[in-house]
Image (cartoon, rainbow, N blue to C red; front, side):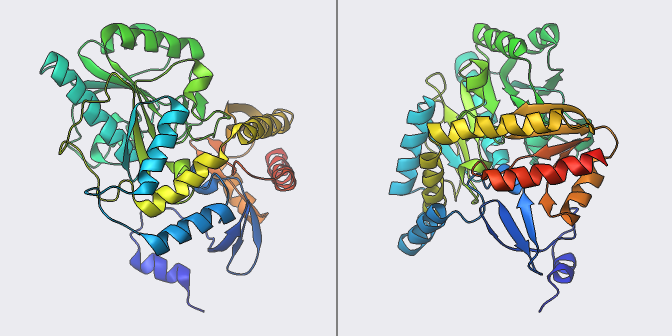
Length: 387
């Protein structure tokens, strides 16, 4: 058998600090390595495999579409794209959607939409985009510029201008920053920032200020969207309806997709030729995303809430845990005794996959994980945390 790890190290750019694990197959919440060892998955491919590994209904839809029509470009209409757009808009209450390929691309599209919206109404000089300290919005030059973490602002200068960062909860600073701004972008739970949920009162005040100043309130729901928090969109927990919401990750169920949902205020801002994406709305990807949306019914969302509460109860009663954050099945754990990175490595040795975010262990299990796998995974994790 070929030494896949050596081939990867030789030919793939070394931009990832990979774990020493070669995954060969997976089903549901369990995957297997090249030696047949099983691992319970608490990562979902960083929130992507919301239905788990190789869900039958999802895989069948993707396969059938690949045999029927694989790609057309956006010069033509296709049924899977139109069906997905209708489902998304009807389920979320938005007016229209633009499809791309990733969360970063979706956030780029939202930034372009906001700047065009402001230019159309107010002319030049109102292009600033405000984001929050500790945020993460992507790895393109502009979305890195939007990311409010100094650690990402290295090497790639010059960054795109026109971004300002405000600490979450600092209402006065936010009010000042919104002068001359076209948009505020928030993550309701800052995933890469340590799985930190925003304060509900701060969100309400920020939303009210944006409305009063005609600044677009943009929700980056790349990681929090598509049922991850127990609601279809995390904004539902906070009682606000953003002008624009971006999606990716879980929407595709395992294939690359990004989406920009626009409400009535900005729905007509971008016209023909102003934005585009070669693979956006790809029929095969949309076929998979349609299955994801169909499966995210009230029963599954209620299960996400219940499973999230179970995870929290187990962690909060664990003596090795300092604190627990997040919403639903998006959980951040601050360990008392061990480093998060060390816990992730030890977990692999015991047959469990977890993520990290700064000094926290980050958990993003498949939304469909069964009770047996969830309990077994939590047993492994709490034993590691206690040690």
